[in-house]
Image (cartoon, rainbow, N blue to C red; front, side, top):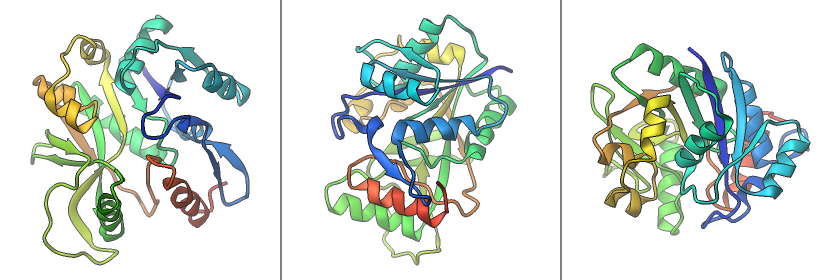
Amino acid sequence: MSVAIIIPARYASTRYPGKPLAKLTGASGETQTLIERSWRAAMAVSGIDRVVVATDDERIRDRTESFGADVVMTSEACRNGTERCADALSVLGESYDIVVNLQGDAPLTPAWFIEDLVAGLRENPEFDVATPVLRADGVTLNSFLEDRRNGRVGGTTATFGINRRALYFSKEVIPFCDRAFAPNDATPVFHHVGVYAYRSNALSQYLKLPVGLYETLEGLEQLRFLENGIEMMCVEVDAKGRLFWELNNPEDIPRIEGMLKAMNLP
């Protein structure tokens, strides 16, 4: 099965304008933009036929081309990363069995997260969409709660059934927990990793689906599938000791830089 990774990158983010060009310094002292680090994360994944950055902004295009990435210009009308991936696929005029949406704010995404995600979709033909989830330890859960107490969205959490069918995703911390957890405790909260794998038919169909109430309230694109009766599979992944965080706010830069240094990543 052919697989492409598309990295949607938008300059005009409401919460963090220009986010793809934010600079992150790693353990070696080398500074790279967020979009370059996300592209390098995609390039490390095995079994991928093509990696493409999809943007509507010339500044991002120029910066991305400067480090040798494949870039496609997409419509300014795209409202989220899934729509931009669908538009990019249309512009490319190519067909792939599976398209992976690696959102450009997740430079710490390990290659095996995506490899496990693609394998899960291949092995479960009853699903047309899959996304990875990571069980939060006490440190991660406490970070989520601290962000919410300070009015920040620190990450997305997911709930799913015993059959791995997604139930709901939220920027609030779900499910509710009425106890504290030690830093290394495994918690009942799952951190949603901002990656999606779609079969091409599901990606094309997404553009025709109406935007629902919960997608509007949460600002989470994957809820469009759930609100329209399209089931998603949650694939639980193992961090294997790797630290993971998305860049959602400017305050996340020092946090991610600290993780790069802690993991000795350049």
